[in-house]
Image (cartoon, rainbow, N blue to C red):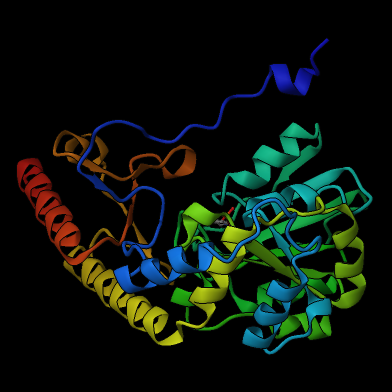
Length: 335
Ligand SMILES: *Cc1c(COP(=O)(O)O)cnc(C)c1O
């Protein structure tokens, strides 16, 4: 009775438990400032809870478009950008979903759920895109994550353009773009086979509210909009995201703080750290268990990255603790 894809599926789990310091999910270390929470709770009173939200989140998309300097016809919003990954896999013809590992796990999750064929073309030694003459004739969509997780680096713009030139649909996931040097959003004007994914879950600190969006040419958005569930974004999430869009300065300050802390972490462990354009650092230190015993949760990496960890930049005191613990780890290892 159950599809084999479902029977074979492994539940996606993250670490749970009573630990002190959580640096495993690349969340923002900052909750909303109390004044903003107060304002939010006040705004909540104006919501008509018995009425559905706008069917396509139009007023919210208008504000987002203005913020990004785009038109509403360039944007579709989803309940987290994860939900848009799911929808995009229903958008195009073709059987093969191309991923470049090591990368974000959700591309695999949604492709497997639909029983689609996954084609992994691993990133090269520098974690950049490999150079290919052709991706073949059966490609549905190619996922590129830049800056990439869990490695932290940007993918070269030239290699992204090379892939776009092949003409297949390309999803460029820019979840970490606020921490990076430059975005590739400008490429949307040139390429109608490009969809860029963004989220409010990282730099905007709204992981709890589940809001993401896709940016593409109107001809693409028009089709994608048809298959995103109606009424997908709830009124509370939209209010919160609108409020954060008006907090440019706060976001900028926080992003600057995180970038400085990240660079400090990288320089403290320069022999083990990889370059990062994100709010996390990949370290060539097999210190997962050591940190966990000290109440610090990071991400343990696997496969090709076995023996490495990914550490999210936290608050100043959290970063101080993880730095001290990692130094102790190196001391005990006699490094
Ligand atoms: C965190 C993250 C997302 C965000 O997902 P949401 O569903 O919007 O919370 C998307 N892509 C990558 C690569 C991420 O790390």
